[in-house]
Length: 435
Image 1 (cartoon, rainbow, N blue to C red):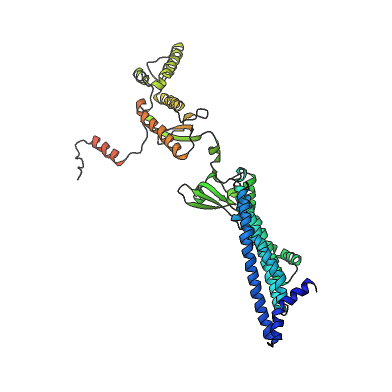
Image 2 (cartoon, rainbow, N blue to C red):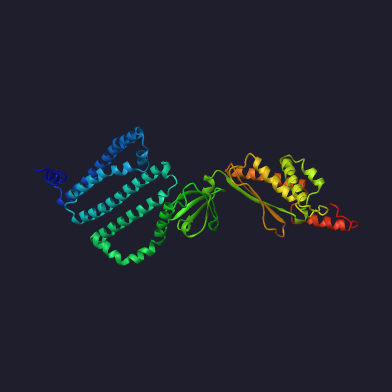
């Protein structure tokens, strides 16, 4: 007697015993079936317990001793747990047909269900492995800013698509190859259904290949109200944590189809740009007089410059016999020109300003608000809070220094300005007293 025949006799042992005891054969059959199912359940529970106690725990112990973190992530994604289901599944797969030998319809339903379960188990194993790979790659410096999530999602979509095809083929009883061929006719519908997924996949590849956005980049996307750090790049969306700690989701395809601002260049450069303007009243600009010259010489940052510049101007005017009875004639210094030189010198001596990058103080085209005097330089410290402090510190000084050069800043008149003006025009008018 071979092993298979011995196993069959073991399965039917209780049924034979009951029949020998005079029990109805039909009842003996069902009682034997119930007993075999209960025994099988107990065996599966015991095998699961042994696998969990010894195999999985041994794997955890082994992973704790290894230097690589890949096996640690395998445990976190339950990969050993799914592997441990293979042995009980094999036992069930080969045992149940013998138990249900007298129930052909039940055997057919069993094979259908077990095949479906095998498909899902394969998907779970692949998903667990891919999640492990994603987590492991994120620990590597070269992959921290790459959209690994997008590629994992693409692979998972393909895996689920094939799983769906196998399940449908199993339900309909068709051959898998014929089923795939029949789907060709519905390709247009499939493209329409997965349009966003396909666009997202294409966008993810372009974003990665062209290095448009990385995880950790600071981006500004006004259309979607995003202004913050990229925390995740997936197949469909890019997640941005704004500086107010809110989150904004941006369609991945928008990164290649629309315009946005990526501040990575600033973060990688030696300094962060400061570019602001102050508006000078045009009627406060004038040629300096000898009295003004003596007053401005007390400003240490430009005292030597004033002497050198004035000597050069005097030499020119003398050589060309310029009539200086009228200040307009010849070459002259202006209070605005001296102020510009003062700002330039101030920036070049400021400890927080990067000296090896542009430092420019220039006029822009005059407007109805006055002459824009633009300051362009770079802060050494690129951190936002420190950058704003440095910028404010520089412009605090510039605004306070304006009056020392007999210049005035433009400012739209307020209600108090208008009231003071009319009070001066009509000093006898009663002033409104505070209640």
